[in-house]
Length: 101
Image 1 (cartoon, rainbow, N blue to C red):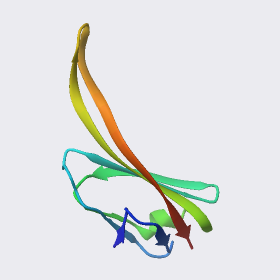
Image 2 (cartoon, one colour; image 1 turned 90 degrees about the horizontal axis):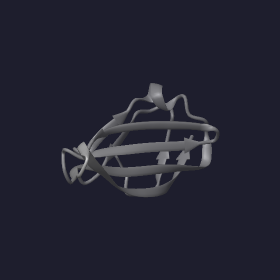
Image 3 (cartoon, helix red, strand yellow; image 1 turned 60 degrees about the horizontal axis):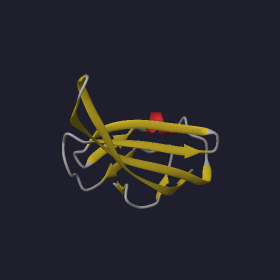
Image 4 (spheres, rainbow, N blue to C red; image 1 turned 60 degrees about the vertical axis):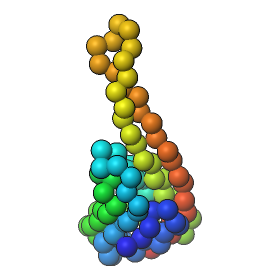
């Protein structure tokens, strides 16, 4: 599969297996792929593997200069006076190059 820590090349006619080093199964990975005037966005558990089906990728435009945004998100409970339930959303974000054919 393609490591989401590196630039990627996407072939729209084939499924794309994404892999990464998982940190915490409670975290979420948010994935955005921008190609031409199109965008694909999805989120999944931080388990180290996710597959984007070719039928989903087929909706993207071809683009030799696309981009991919990968975000690891962790929500932590926060106690605040006057608020019944609170949480803090902590995210690390990486933007990489993507070629879509």
